[in-house]
Amino acid sequence: QVQLVESGGGLVQAGGSLRLSCSLSRNNILINTMAWYRQAPGNARELVASLTPGESTDYGASVHYGDSVKGRFTISRDVEKNTVDLQMNSLKFEDTGVYYCYVRGQNWLPTGWSSPRDTWGQGTHVTVSS
Image (tube, rainbow, N blue to C red; front, side):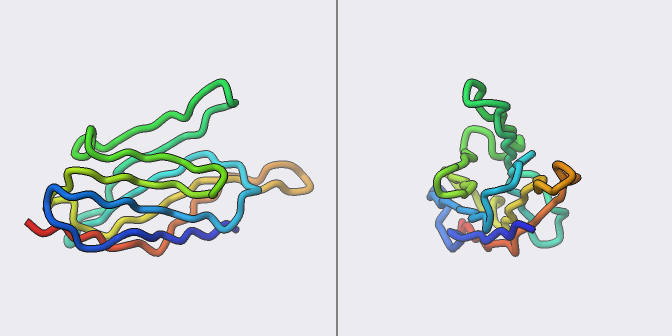
């Protein structure tokens, strides 16, 4: 099973930027969806951004953003480095929370592709000071 390791969290002033990176331990899986979620203290985990790889090199990935981060955050995938990154600009106090990397993927088995499996990272803390 693939493992995810996040990095890039930290303390930043409001208006600043951070870049989170999530490294996948394996590259021989079929990626269905890659995403970043976050959870603020006392709140439920919420989707920040998601990316669904294109069906071929002719079709780009499909991305989706939560309403609160549209225009400020950008999710991207680096196939060579086997990472999914989140560029966060114009950070606000309310962006504070633990950010989790998420991947839904399938493994190749002797019988064919497995059922999709969800994997979460351990989380990285982002603190935005006002």
